[in-house]
Image 1 (tube, rainbow, N blue to C red):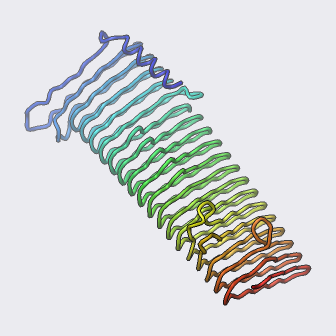
Image 2 (cartoon, rainbow, N blue to C red):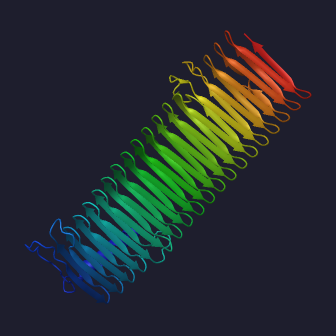
Length: 484
């Protein structure tokens, strides 16, 4: 709907013709000192069009300075600035106004203020250390609102977009370069932020949305040392990352509210850091990762939350913390060596699924350190490290505190250290799908401790030069271990 409105607005502006067009065209002067030319253009009517072209000398400290004010509806500006050190300030008050700008040069400043409904601005910047500051004020609803589109090629540029009262779009169409700063701030309902394409190193991308039914979409970030910071406060907000490619990138997502989601389809690279914090109920966080030395931290506070990590690589760190009831944490298809996995769940009826090689059982998972803590009632943990190729030398430490907790465990390979502690009543240790527990391989140290009444251990231990220790303290406990 916004696109159709944009086409209508542009058609109206074109139909107005050039009879209401003002030109400001300054030729470069061949003088040793920089020359500043200032112009002020004011339009107070409907359907006015201002076309501005400025050309200043490259390398000057101060270029041209222009201020444009338009009041009314269906007004438009189309400006082209070439050179260095130029300043353009545009203010439009009314509805369905359009500001289109093309910047080529360095150290230019563009300020666009649009106060009204269904306004649009599109800015194309080529050069270094330019500043684009866009503010759009007005009410939008159901996708009909103001839109700000920015395309940037260069280094050290700063793009700031501030949109209020909901229903607006902020779009970074293309960002090519390094050390750029892009910040979108949106207030209200049904706002949308898009980072369509980011290519380069050391860029800072930030989106802040305060309201509900807001969307932040990142299509591609390709490069190193980039920072992506997404903050959403409200309900039913969504963050979607299609692809991140590169090393030493930092991603931080903070969502406050219910039914929010943060989803990454594919994350590829090394030494990356991802932090996801969700505070509320029925939230979803999911990432798929290929690479080494990455760090992932998921924190969810509330009920009915789900976190998922699918990983392939070496020396990665994965931390999942869930506080509340009916939460689910899935770390599936984690393959590689020397990974560090920590899962903590506090509450009742929580579920943990920790499974290696669920889809590709030709991959191994060795020398990993796995720590699981579940504190509450009726929690369930499933740990599966069993493939065609054995996984070796893993350290597994599982603690369940509370009543009616269950552990399904199936581990094969050699030189594992497995420690299980259950403190409570009517707890159960079995195998996958409720069958008998199976621990198989050589030189495995397997220790079980249960404190409470009515606890059960049932399974098989197949190992050469392995050891089994089962300790039960309480009444009506059962332990059946078949050792081969």
